[in-house]
Length: 278
Image (tube, rainbow, N blue to C red; front, side, top):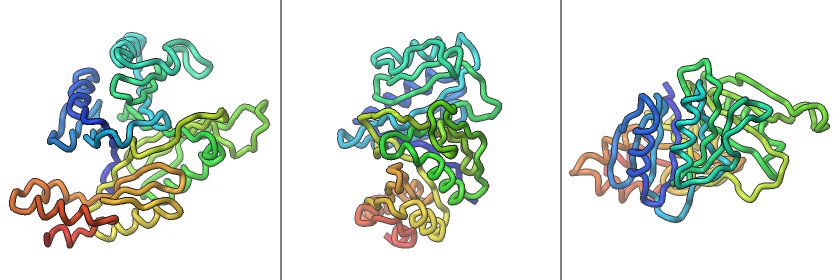
């Protein structure tokens, strides 16, 4: 059975600080694991991983985390705290789609969208992809490809552009979809932007078997780019990590961890048996 997908955020050696900040800010949140490389944490039941990756990459505005706040008091509280040391892309206020909404970048460079609306789902924080520039026409194509790749997945909401834009009927402004047990949002922008998807934000797919790793590696990476250590970028530029679920256990074994690291640093696609034998 496919484990839940979760978000990974690339930090310049601030993952521990960020995890501590977020888990104190968001209700019903806690640290799952911390070590010098990663900090795993849950925010209102949604899992994240912070990676101490250094300065090579940074989070991109093309991926944000949409928080359905549910009340005026909560959206104002989160906005004030997240804005400190950061900046507002769209200040808290009334917009066509919401009576109270904001899009901001926090002090760690991570992008959040806050909406006063509630969501009728257990998941209150939803990863959100922004398709812009050459990706603008491809939102619907990408979403339906993801839904086809992952089991038990479906499209929940489709919102086309208003008629006055004169875009083709299949051109979507917003889409909400579910991959396994996790909700995602996707939005498109017809305006030019100076950013794109990057490894600064990625999505982790944990696999129990080599068959699963092979399947997701091939299907998500097709027409995209394969990188090292289980990383790939799909044909739309979205970054994924296809990793064995046994890896943390192998890494925590003092007798094996060094050999395991040496083994997987040589890999593109992970090979579970090679790691177990290391």
